[in-house]
Length: 117
Length: 116
Image (cartoon, rainbow over all chains, first blue to last red; front, top):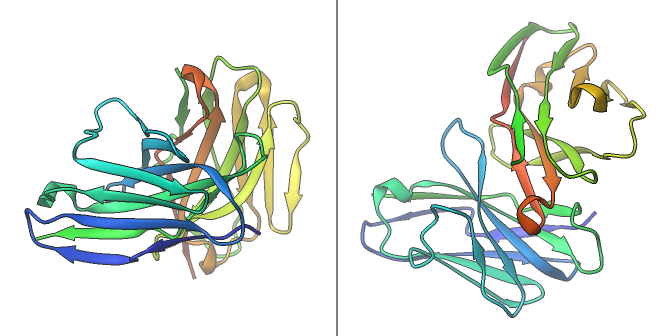
């Protein structure tokens, strides 16, 4: 099946610094990638939808200047948490939709655990 | 608006017992997809099943089975003869085009603990 990778899998950073998380579709082209956030023992919340070559669509309540999303190619989307604070600590998961498929075909990455100290 | 409800927060069963995880959804779309995912302690989401809104046929895959009832907007998941390796958080999810673009909405998850 289609594989989506995320890098890094875990990252610890100091408050005030920025962190970039990469999401790659390894064996397929992804026109659309999604970014989710999961708080401990909570569900996944969609943060934003990113389409290759265009601006991301953010969900209500998600700060676009805080969570910068870039989808520069059909196989890579990045999420940058700018000026991270402890409350940004979370599990971030991306998913990718394969080119030419209907909206239901999403493949999830393994997630990135961010800890801000 | 779309919504997925998993009323069971945590379930504990003894190994070899059968267990059913409930999922109720809401959507205004007539075309939509339903999913179940497993999230073990490692955090990685494991895809279990996808079902589209036009296919109400129940499905069985090994010890897993799913009961899709459109009349009650439910998509329940049953594990037969549970095993310790089944211990995980299970998420039900709905994919539809509410709001004009494709979106997946997850339920709050059910934590299943299988006791040896």
